[in-house]
Amino acid sequence: MSSRFITTPIYYVNDRPHMGHAYASVHADVMARYLRAAGHEVFLLTGADEHGEKIARAAAQAGETPEAFVARHASEFEQAWHTLAVVPDYFVRTTAPAHKAVVQRTLQRLYDAGEIYLAEYRGLYSIGQERFVTDKELVDGKLPEDRDPPIERTEVNYFFRMERHRAWIRDLLLAQPEMIQPPQYRNEILQLLNEPIGDLSISRPASRLSWGISIPWDHEHVTYVWFDALLSYLSPLGYGQDEDENEDEAQVDHDPHGAPRHTSQTSAPSRRQSAFERFWPSATHVIGKDILRTHTLFWLSMGHAMGIAPYRRLHVSGHLLGADGRKMSKSLGNGVDPLEAARQYGADVLRYALVREVSFGFDGIISNTIIEQRLTRDLADDLGNLTSRTLAMIRKYREGIVPSARTDEVAERAIIERTEAMPAQVLALVEDMRLAQATELVMELVRHLNRYVASSAPWELAKSAAGDARLDTVLYTVVEALRAISDLLAPVMPAKMAELRGLLGLDGAPRWAQPWGEGVQAGARICEGTLFPKPQASPTQV
Figure 1 (spheres, rainbow, N blue to C red):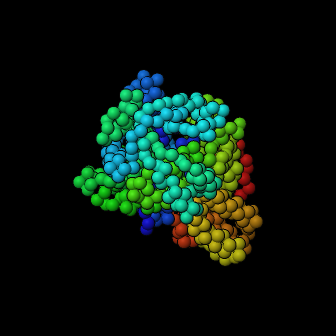
Figure 2 (cartoon, helix red, strand yellow; figure 1 turned 135 degrees about the vertical axis):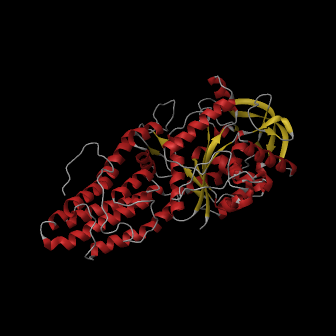
């Protein structure tokens, strides 16, 4: 069993969670669940980025202190992940004392090593992105993702010598082409690295912005929010802490079925258990393309200066678009509220639609219409109908008792071989964050089973005793294949697949790559129920 470390973005909590947040977190959670099911020790991290100028301004506008403002919004994010069945092992908050200590120790070490210096800087500053920008980044006088144009600002800041590490980053990305996925984002960064990237301003005068972590050797300055936030990938792992600082910290904990138990910011894996050494080498970051530069130019250069190995993989998502084809935005009013969608359709249906509809790394539309289409076509018509008609036939023809398979024909052997090969095929796609393709692979099996039922015509076999053996085999084959499908789709739809296992008469958690015939046992009693109610019911032939 290997250890795996997966992170979502550390979300900037100046507002409530939106669909882009949900998209990244659901993908990270699904990946974590698949890897955990396959036997890996997984640590899934998410959290709240709580410092910076935007937070201070938003808190002032809300009439709250920054502390109260971020506590309220961080709680909203935690509750949102609970609603969407996203179960992190750790929720980091950048206001936590343990995180602050990591940031200040790291700053001091880099300063002592000559990686940080004081200088005056004059340039264009984006309030929205909380960084200095260059003229060539501007479109019509502002950054594309900002509402307002940057302002000219002159101030004395501490700078990190980011340019010093440019050649190393470029060599790294050339030597490890798989490191950033999809590859177009690696190419974008390589293009930037052909020219100087400059040094990074990593402090703000406390006289202007007091809401931040103090520079340890100069309390007249606070730490730049991005330098602070990126280190939150390390602080939950106990990076840089002495053993005696971790005596009260807890280990990653899981329930008996392998699902992680949520831990608060006051507990994390202990340094005594070498959490950093165990998890960091496998670090996989899941981000949106709007924070690509910070996770490459900033984060890789910081890690190199700190003397830690770079992350293993950076998975970069595209933008979610509204029904109008434009990027979802609050100002345009073209977004879908993830929490409202979860209430309307169910969290599992939303999770399925997010994973299946928009291939990770590319822009794609998410709307209520699209969610409803996935619910109706994929889940109700394909998987739901297969389940309901199979259960109905077992009730009608075998009094609700699963029969034994009594014949062995080409059609059944093909299904068995396909089903047993699928866990490895799905896992390979998951490793590359190709969750849409992994899910579609399973749904192709669902459609194959629907064709198998249609061609086998159990309702015709039931008309005479001569068809009994064949009827038993068809019914058992579909039931056992549905069991395998419940295992394969459990990371995407944990609650619905638990419901499916219950309908099949199974107890307990899913089992990854369970051999054929060891799931649903002959003689088991199936249950009644509708897995995915159709918006408009239609008669089913049984």
